[in-house]
Image (cartoon, rainbow, N blue to C red; front, side, top):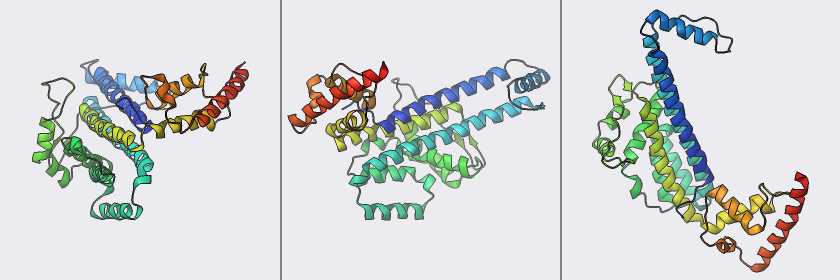
Length: 316
C-alpha cells in the first residue's frame, strides 16, 4: 500500500520538516541581522541590545568582531543540524528495528552486531547497519545503492562533528574524494528534472566547509531510506497486522472511545486506520476483512456501540 505511513516514519517526517524550518529560519535570521547595517560598531551595539532585550538574565556582551562571530554562528547552526538529523534517523531506525526484531535470528543478530562494533565506531557504521537489516530480512536494497555513499559520508561527517570538534578524519576525506560519492552526488534524483543538487561539503585535511543545505540533504537522504524501509515494513507485516493494532488501540484496550466518536464502527475503523497509518480503502467494506470470522466482528461492533454511549455521556 503506497499510502501507508508507519508511526516511526510519521515522527521522522515531522522532524524533517522541523529541521528545514530550523535551518532556514536560523540562517536567514543571522543574515538579516548581519545585513541590517554596514557599520561594525552599530552591528555590535544592535546585537548587544537584542541580547539585553531577549527577556533572559543575560548581561551586556560586547561583540568586537560581529562579522566573524556571526559566520561562526552560522557554521555552528549547520553542525547542530547535522547532529539533529543523525539523532532523528537513529530513533527511527531503532524503533523500526525493534518492531522487526521478531523476524531476526537472535544469535546471528548478536554476532553480527558485535562484529560491526569491533571493526568500527558505531556512529560511522550506520550504512552497514541499514544493509544488515535488509540482509537479515532478505530485502532487496538495490534502490538504496545510489544514495548509500551519501548516507555513509554524512554519517562519518556527523562523527567528526560530534567526536572530533568538527575536524575531518582521514576516513571522511577519503569518502569525499571517492568515485562512489562523487557519482552519487552527480546522479542524485532531484524533484525537478535536469536540476542538480548543490555541491557537497568541501573537505580538506584540515577543515569541513558546511553550508545550510548540507544538513537538509543529509535528512532528505535519510527520508528516502526511511520511506523504502516503511514500504517493506508494511509488506512484511501485512494489512491485517496494522488493522489489528488499530482495533486494539482504539477499541479493545481503552475503556472509552478515542475521539472523534463516529456514527458506527465501520467509520470509526476507517477514520483511525487513516489517521494512524494513512491506510485508505477504496471499498469501505474492506475495512472488516482482517476479522477471522463474523462472530468476532459482531462482538466488536457491540463493544463499539456500548463504548460510544459511555463516551458521548462523558462528554455531556
